[in-house]
Structure formats: C-alpha cells, structure tokens
Image (tube, rainbow, N blue to C red; front, side, top):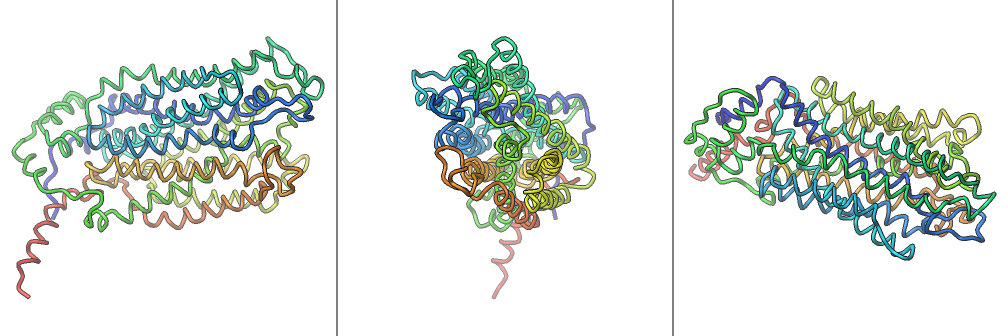
Length: 533
C-alpha cells in the first residue's frame, strides 16, 4: 500500500494549467533554444573555416578542414556536453536545481562569446582556441539537459506534464531554425557588401578577408537568448519536490508553491518529516538496480542509438546535400555563397521537418503516450532511412533531388515526433527525486556518446569508397548509402530497446518512481526476517 502524498505535491499534480507554467516553459526553453543554436551553428560554418584557414593556392578545389580538425571542431562540444550532463546532473541532486541552473547559463554566455573571439596567428592557433571554448560551451549546455527537464517535470501537473517538458525541448527546433536564418542573413549581407567571384574563376579572391567576421558573428549571437533569460532563472523558486523530498523542508516547499500557484497550501511538517525520514537507497544499491536498473538501461541505450542517427544527419546535412547534387560543387561558388547555400538547405529542413515534429509531440504526448510515440518514431525513421538507402543511386540522379530532400525531412519529422523528444522527457519522470537529475544526466550522457560516434564516425564513414574520390586527407569510407543502412540499423535496435521503458502518461512522479512504496518495502523485508524457518 502506498504512503499518503504530501499536500504540496498533490496540489502540484492536480493544479490547473496557469500562467506560471508557461513562464517556466519559456525560461527553461530559452536554454534549449541556446543549446540547439550553439551546437548546430558550427555545421553552418565549417566549410567557410576550411576556405579561410586551409586555403591552398595550387589546389583546384577550395580549402577544407583536415579530417582531425573537422572531427574536433564538430565533436568537441559534444565531449563537453557529455561531461556537463554527468557533472551538473549529479550536482543538481546534491545542491538543488535552482542553485546550479544559473551556473550553466553563465558558462554558455561566456563561452559563446569567447568562441567568436577565437584568436591565433595561425590556423592551428585559431582552431585550438575555438575547440577549447566550444568544449566548455558544451559543458554548460550539458548541464541544461538534466536541470531543465527535471525542473519542468517537478513544476508540472500530471495531466499535462509531458506536453510541458516537450515544449521546453521543442525550443531546440526554433534554435536550429534561428541559426539557419541568421546564417542566411549574415552571409547574404556580407555577400552583398563584399562581392566575390567563384573559386574556379579566382582562387584567392573567392574568399574575401571580411568573411572571417561572418562565422564569428554567427557564433557570438548564441549568447543573446541566454543573457535575456538569466534574471528570470534566478527568480524561479526551488522546485517543491526537491525542497520537500530531498532538502526535507516541506514547509518551505508549501510556501514557495502557494506563491507560484496562487493557492493556500498548509503542510503538516510533522507528517512531512515522517514521510522523508526513512533511509533511502542510493544509485549504486541493489534496490535501485531491482527497481530502476532496466529503466535506466532502456533510457540510456535508446538515447544513445537515437543520437548516433540524429546527429549524424544533422551535423552533416551539408555533406549529404553536396553528395546528391542539391548544393553545387564548392569550386563553382565563392566562400560566402557556399555558406548561404548550406544555410538555406538546413533552414528548409528545419522549417519543414524539424520544427513541426517537435510540436506534434507537444500536442499529442499526453493523449497517445510516450511509449507509443517513441516506438512509432523509431519505426518510421528506420523505414525512411531504408527508403533513402536502398534506391540511393536513383535519388542522386538529376531530377530526383527534391524527392530525396522530402524523404530526408520525414526522417527528421519522425525523430522529433518520436524518440528525440521522448528520450528527453521520460528520464525526468520515472526516477526518485533525489536521483532524478543524476539519472537524467546519465541517460543524456549516453545520448551524447552516441552523438560523438555520429560526429566523429560519420565524417569518415560517409567518404566515397574510392579513395581518389574521397575528400582530401580522408581514407576511403563506406559511402553515404552504406552509412544510411547503418543508421537504419541503429533506429531498429532503438525500436526494440524501447520495450524496456515504462509509460508515464497521467501518473504522478512519485507513482512512477515508486517513492511512496519505500516504507512498504522496508516493512516487508523486516517481516520476512522475523518469519521462522
């Protein structure tokens, strides 16, 4: 039999949707807007960086980042993100969600600005400082994952909790879209002001010196939304579930939520102390393994497999579009023209496939449930990737490029109306309050490990199988077609592992984490020890 719920937590579970919920969505969501902008904007400028810093006058093709530099520039932020998810996830359970929340945002602001100010007299110097600041930028972004998800889940009512957390995560789509739009504006403005010929017409003149400012401005603009929301993050009260269940101050939790929900909540401190005084199991205990071991395995492995596919596609859209001929050959364009074309292609994908998928999840997750959406999303991603890979040669022939882009956009739609959203939501709902942020951080870090596999691996794997046709400095790869088969396999295994993840639709956090059963377990174990053999 479950223990009686604290009044403040019952009030949160049953509260009607009100203005403060939407305020919390915007405050937490702007962090994710910044996260997506910062993580994906680098893919808009890597070609430009290659032209500026690795120009070879005698080469018939424009300069490009060497393989090790490209891997580092694209993937170093994910290494920082992985570390940040583990560290700030753990810290959020130890110090409280609110106290850590401001640290992550300030780190993101400082490192966004510093990324754009990367200095050095040589290409190696600039790339080294850029990678250094992007690692710490990723570290701050990593903290935003477990903290934003946990804060939103602990503020929300149980009826619309999924939609609220999904709405926070959906701001990623707008961050991605905004990055593309700003890249279009910046590249078009510079191109209009500083016209340049195509590379094949004038190798040195195709990259104007002012282009060095274009990528710096784009990266530095990532600090703006974080700065705008810092004050409001600091004004948010600590979540009631942390204050009552972890800090064991139910009276303060009731006071904070009375102010937030604009209702009178009187908590009996004696009952609260009784409910929170029992000895709790830890993350590395056999009791945690028995109750939540398979759940943590499920949330971690599905996020890992999803991010291999998702980030491989997202970071290397430009390479895929070039491979199918949707973006002209680099030598036929100036540096700023190439940046413009890449931004236009990625903005179109974000607008048509990425953003709608997030909001389908927001509107439907509390109707059809997390499990169904994740299962459907993995299945449809597998189908569309196979539909791209099997007739790949058909898609690369003239006249069929638009069809490829449409199919490609559908894989993004079902990623976001599917596991890319649900893998973020579920870990914030199914673990105990004292371990919630930590477990979300572990799950998210597994996802970023998958992103690192995608970011570093896809650079090499997608190269042409003929060494002579591969990008300069790269060994022969398995080609885009075989890479798509591999990504389809990742999605299929994600589909199977989804069966380890429980459905949390319409249930309270305490019901999902089984925190109310802890006393029952203890009494049962005592009883079993006193029964004679």
